[in-house]
Amino acid sequence: MKALLLIYVYLACTGLSKAAMTEAQYKAGAKLIRKTCISKSKVDAGKVEALRKGEWPEEKALMCYLYCVLASYKVVTPENTLDVENGVKALNAQAPESIRDAAIISTKNCKDSAKTTSDKCKAAYEISSCVYNDNPANYFLP
Image 1 (cartoon, one colour):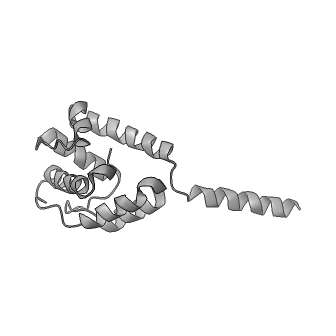
Image 2 (spheres, rainbow, N blue to C red):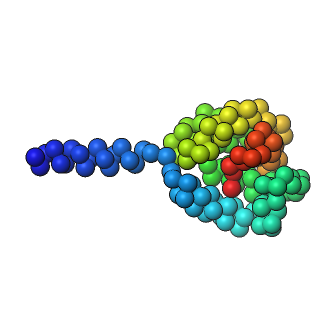
Image 3 (cartoon, rainbow, N blue to C red):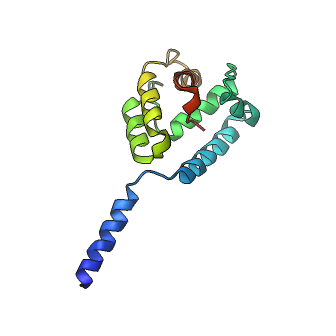
């Protein structure tokens, strides 16, 4: 009986640890990344919030904020392109069900969106704006 209980506890713990984040956990993580990247890039927080409204000014601090976000999620390659494989893996493992499918589709649709790969911040801006324009209602980056 004791052995069965130990097996159950082990399976419950290991099985649950691989589940996607809840909506609240995802939002808390996104909030932390947003706060960290705003501080690093010195961008105005209002400009970050305006992204969700479709306001995408080409400003260096905002572009570098977006690079920080993508780098935090480990979805930008050393060549400053979108790492679709890592993006899909991360979304499958961590994104809440409510955004997962739309986010994966947008990630795949934006695989070749980085055009200015000589500038990591500009490339991140191109990737992020593609993700937004692909599905504004389900934009998921912090």
